[in-house]
Length: 333
Image 1 (cartoon, rainbow, N blue to C red):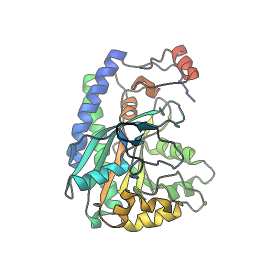
Image 2: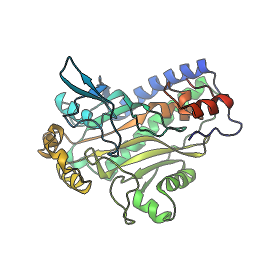
Image 3: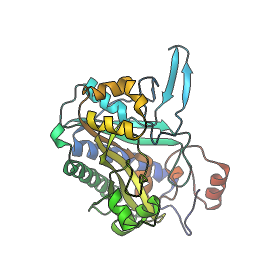
Image 4: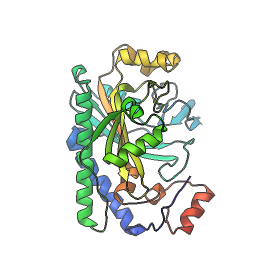
């Protein structure tokens, strides 16, 4: 459901918005590569569904699938590149401490549309090789701080060119686990808990997403075959325009053979063990990695003080959303 805040107006024209988006993407990519020692690589839009490398997200979303007569098989448009990146690091022989980043474009046909969600997804998808002994909470939190520093530095440079922007970010990251958050607010829903903690601290990394909490329910569903549920999380910033928490990144240290074995069983996904990607992981053939996705449109929306993601990306919208935005003079691309 789309909600347009009362008295909202964009600080930038459509022309200046497009120029600012270009600037954000250029500046942030350079800062992210420097912070995490990444190099940009080409990435697929479609993958072979029989390889097991498409992102299953929460397990219920349907990928866009179509036949490719000249190949003689079906293809799937990616949901994300969470698994493909790890395979690419192995194939390209990346060494520990080095990684890759891609411009990932995806279609998520079953997404519920609102101010923050679109069927079109664009991310900086990144992945980095690490040593087994680096699979720690401390390493994860250091990586998060590096990303936040790159985001805040990008905003600083953007505001030099567009001083009318009023966006402010908190550079100090608050780290909290999903269990700690449930203990703080046991009577709230997971989304309400996120809004409560981010409203208070403004920049929050919420750890340990995927497994069941003491209440018997997970904070959120997460595929069992890329993140280690004890070493992952979501990065949130407070969105002053919408008055809510905005998730800009989902990331984590990836599964080891041992944690993959455990999580596949816990999630009821043992049938994936025979897929080529999962066999390689279980047999220890893939490097240990950390990685994630950072939403390009969401970051642009947040930095530019926009009320709807359609103001920074071109996508498809239902008639009610189009009417609401038209009546509020919100210009969708």
